[in-house]
Image (cartoon, rainbow, N blue to C red; front, top):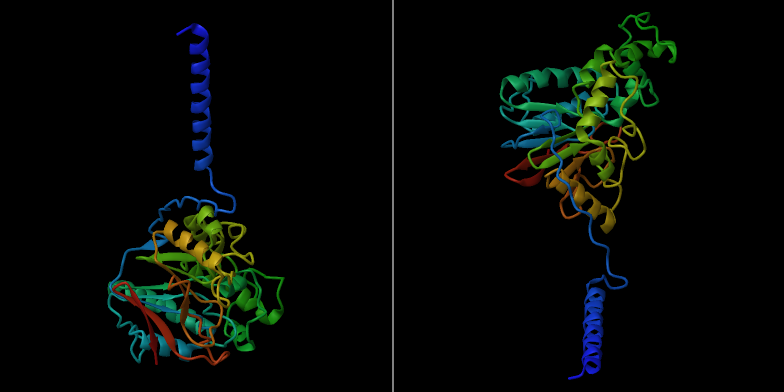
Length: 325
């Protein structure tokens, strides 16, 4: 074979190979209209401050809003206390998802009860986790729009000259002193996490979004705690925003869209959890779940302000069950 025919043959073979390779490359590209690949989920480690190990039995209670009688009733239904308000729950982990205050006259008594039970539960090998809701943090910021006259009067015994809060009315000064960062009741609230995981369940007042995971659960909890202790001038940026963990209603208002449920699924996967339990938005039909059981809404309007039923959510053996009086 002469060199010219050989050269032509080699060129032809090269063109065929090039075309084949080009075709392979095109076939590996996503087809027009195909869904974009899902972002990789990065697992996030939580400190002991933001996480607890699996417990034999966990019961979650929603918003109490200043109603001591209903608080006692739901705690008894949970098997946490007796008729004398003494802890009988043993190793039970009882989670109250925030908004224990405002809208009712008994919020000081409820906070005192929560603190007493926290100590008793720890001594018995259990735990009471009282969480920070938007109303607790509003009080720390002297936003008393939802405080009743009785709720203001309950703190009138505090010295109105201590701290000299000048951004509130005279009848609110005692409460302002109590809840101002570094004040007696702000110090109690400093032990209330914003977000906490117990076993494979995440608890929060409003909701947990991917942005909160990116920000850092420990950062949110520690920064809010430092603010309430009076060690920081303000809580972490975004905590009090409309889409912050104590304010968002993304999962609790109505029926979430599929995209929202997918967002929740990725969030839970990053936190090594199976479900999110939240309060904040009154569920007129009682405790319920959405997003294939990944989101549980437990604010039933328990207080006399709303007139809701006595209900709590029990998590035992990996299953969630609604407790009713």
